[in-house]
Amino acid sequence: MEVPVTTSNDDRTADRPISLTAPSGIDRAAHHRLDEAWLASAWSHPTTRVFVVSGGQVLIDENSDGVTELVMTPSFEAPLTEEHRYFLGTDEEGVSYFALQKDALPGRMDQSARAAGLREAGLLLSARDAGLMVHAVALENWQRLHRFCSRCGERTVIAAAGHIRRCPACGAEHYPRTDPAVIMLVTDEEDRALLGRQVHWPEGRFSTLAGFVEPGEAIEASVRREVFEEAGVTVGPVEYVASQPWPFPASLMLGFMAHATSPEITVDGEEIEEARWFSREDLRAAIESGEVLPPFGVSIAARLVELWYGKPLPKPLKQG
Ligand SMILES: [Zn+2]
Image (tube, rainbow, N blue to C red; front, top):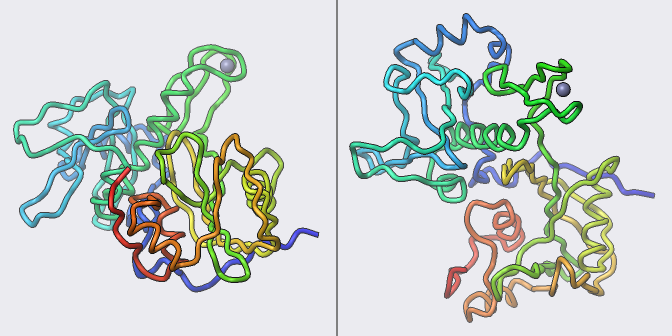
């Protein structure tokens, strides 16, 4: 029988929230998306803030306090392009936020602003700005890949301030898609962690196992299937930790701690080239010697490994 997934009331990531996961303080205010009069009024309001998203990138800049921020302008400074305007929500002060999807990021008079994708900006921006950015990037990716009706093949048009695509031929409404994926730090009886190397990763890179949830599959079953397929290890209890939007192009990473019931490793050789059990001491030594490059940066994988490790990982000798 399947053992159900358990959740803990303690937020294990509270001391340092996972990037792109922390509450942004933005109310998405979905009820306004179909209200064209409200949207027009919000757009023209002097406090409204707008940023451009293009190819998964935005402009970021440091303010006078050295804090990295999204470069946002009032709407009257932004080119009005109704077709590609995404309404992202409002904050506590009633400020409305929009993203404009453009073919290119605008040129800037101030040369300090620079283009950045989520992997970089997700680590630098405040929870509010990172939340706005990940929403905009996810919409942009979905819009880009869903220009035609999956029911009849006609070209679809944007609606609901970026959150629907409508088919003028058959009337179908298409909604933004999110693909659930599981990512798990598996431990054994000795509290060692199972880390694997994907075939196409740079030499030495090891990380948690991960994979997509399949149609008709419960997430706990998905965790067990992926670990067994990739590493031949059977898993018993599964504990949910946190999730992370990962719009590359449309994933939602569901992070777990999982406990192995058999430690023998047999890698599939297709997706995973090598998998190893690491004690904390093994991992520290392997990172410090440069033999292993651990996951780092914005990904939830880095935080799952760190939660098991009990403190920030040692600095790798080289960054891959
Ligand atoms: Zn259609």
